[in-house]
Amino acid sequence: MNWSYIQYLIGRLLMVLSLLMLPSLLVAVIYQNEVKVILAFVVSMIITFIAGKVMSFRQPEKDVFFAREGFVLVSLSWFLISIFGALPFYLSGAVNSYVDALFEAVSGFTTTGASVLVDTLDVLPESLMFWRSFTLLVGGMGGMGMLIFLLYVVPNMGAKGVYVMRAELPGPSTGKLESRVSSSIYILYFIYLFLTVVFAVLLWVAGVPWFESMLLSMGKAGTGGFNIYPASIAHYNSRVVETILMIAMFTFGLNFNFFYLAYERRWREIFKDEELKWYIYIILGALAIISLALIPYYDNFFRMIHDVLFNIVSIMSTTAYTTVDILEWPIAAHTTILLLMFVGAMSGSTASGLKVIRIGIYLRSIKHEIQHLLAPNRVIPMTYNGKRIEKNVHYGIVYYLMTYLAVFVLILVVLSFDAQNFSSAFSATIATISNIGGSLDLLGPSQDYGSLSNFSKVVMSVGMIIGRLEIYPVIILLSRSTWRKV
Image 1 (cartoon, rainbow, N blue to C red):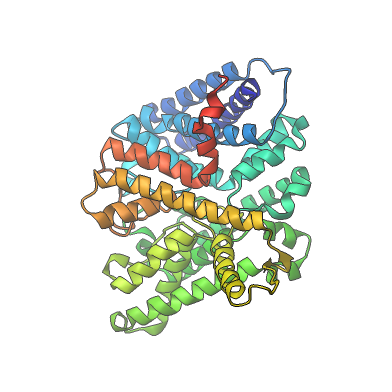
Image 2: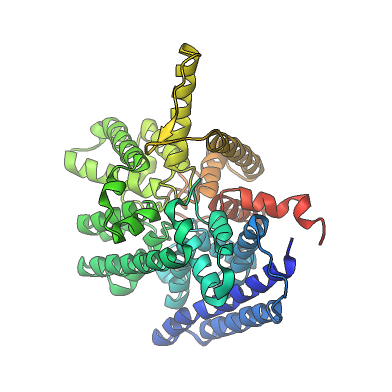
């Protein structure tokens, strides 16, 4: 394990993190926030920069970098970024303890959107609100953000960046991006920020104040929707605003590879993609089930379809914005939403969850096994997008689902010691490991986690990082072999 090189890269990353606090500092000055808030950002930037400078003071001669180093680098980076990213919340006095500050920072960088705060416009100054949403934007970039850093500050990384991409980008495959990392990643980065700005402008045109439109746009870009108001998006009482957000959440729930294919005008490959079809089928199926359950609750059919579709897209994209109090919906709707929280959106997106591609291939493998039982001598290849699915891919998905279940049960057991009831612990565990801020039962989808104990907040913070990195990088980080030669 090349620890000296990992330390060097993390140090450079922390220096970049200190610079990322600069826009929030400018917001504090522009909006004339209190002096203690301005000083909180200044001190946080200085501490973070010095820590990064110390860690990267000397570039190691040995730059051997393989898959294990990539996983460890990504895991340690998320933990350390969250630790230092919590400083502005804590030093400003906006939260009660450093644990609360850490929870808020982890929730942002992992694009979870869970919060210990309610009605943030009255609690947080503009600069901290901006920083909180900005962490969603940075965290949502995921592998793109990490790779751009590596390609910019360490131009000779070359193929080493692929190892980081495999550890960072959600999903079982990164598609065609790995073959042209240095060129395609910049294109995706530009598209990501461009779409963020476009949707912010659309929200502003629709009547949302400019500052709030920026916060909402950064939130949905990272699919991590921190709520600005206790009523979430229902506060605006606007179908136009809700429709814009719905389109945005669906867009950022797509595979980033689609943006690259669109850039190259390879539209046929996008529309023929099986995961995209599965994604749409799941949305339509959930729409039918929940709408059927809600018919007695609505007088306006079109309003019902709108509300249901918005919340389905919001949950599947793991953004968790809400337009209605879904706690008042019937049990059938709750059950469907809980299942969607497990699924998540597409692989290679900013969303978390199991991913549609894993669910699709797993179900297809069940069908394939049944066919094999009925005709054991017949060779029936299992395919995806016209290509044969190899055994190692199939087994990898099965092993991941088993590992996901094991981690889920572990977090569930731990949180059950602090939850009011089983359903609270269950829904909070899904919200944690799938990086969905809203919990159906614990506190309501648009409320805060401030009433939880510090123990539960720490457990959920670790769970959010595990969910964001899809388990394996954190397991590798904590494995005995990783630290054997330290």
